[in-house]
Length: 476
Image (cartoon, rainbow, N blue to C red; front, side):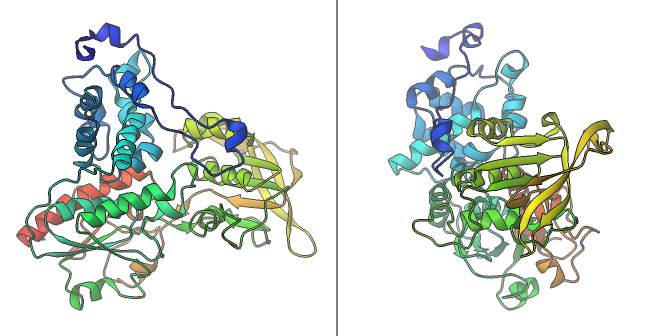
């Protein structure tokens, strides 16, 4: 029997490899890159788990998934039970199994990682969630009796969805408000189809509808209705603000106004939400990348998503321009590896000084300076320093600036009695995520700044616990 394998024998099993599309094929389509584990591979990988008495992996998971129990059930072939166990703590398992940076969290904490390759927890999670979806037997947790309390969630990204799921299970009446025309927030508009198919997100949202959650689209909180009106006119008892950090940042260099220069937010929204990835069916207004030179500025996951999207849209050359070395690059190693395999050209230790345009106001090039690494800065990464006299102009037709985001000010500007910091983010208590405004909680990127999907979901769970306590006691 598998569960009788001694730990030493389990460590001899190599980490199983996720099947994926061939790079030469996937670089020209938006189909999912990773193909998912087969049952045989998932079984083999689950055998590697050491079933620790004190599972460090769960401590490393921001939403606290009982990973050991899930893996035990997979090893026993009880896949639907494993999915139900997952859903006790994670309302979006098919999403997090695809985009969560497990290597820095649950897998990073795995005991196996000390001497061997960590257990492929993310791959197992995805297998379980996909198995559940394909069978149509979704194991939704049981909902508590209705409390009569109404909760408004502002924003349908990962923080909002996670909070909504937990509060609904507690018996509260939950409404999620989304400014755009589709539910999912960054999961829908910010992550490309080849990494997270939209149908996966839509199915998870449908599962949440089945939990009794109401979703309202095209409602711009701060314009359509204010926070105060949610309380005073709509009768909500508590509000959770999870609007994310979607305000684009630019470099403030000459030429950013030229036609052909995009923010990553705009570019990815056009590709994802406006379906520019399917040009045969949708005539989305987007720069025609076919046969052109496209450069993306930045080194994070958003930069990788942008450059790989440009490649799939037909770019002749797709460049990453990053001012540090690859070692300092914040993107997931898997994304960098996939980008390289697909033909993305990395120009590390280069920094833009100016975008160059032609007489018609269209982008025609970027002036770069070569960099070298100096002493470490406050982030712990070595500071990039320009090399004098190394400037040159590289011809490009399109550029995407992917250097981070800031706080969208709309909700804060129409809620003047709610405290914000000097960067415009909402101030919330670290333990409870309560703001200074009674009944209002906030979490995710709008409090912490841009972070990962799973960290936002973790904030949603913290907020839900705190909100439930408030709704039960009325104490602030």
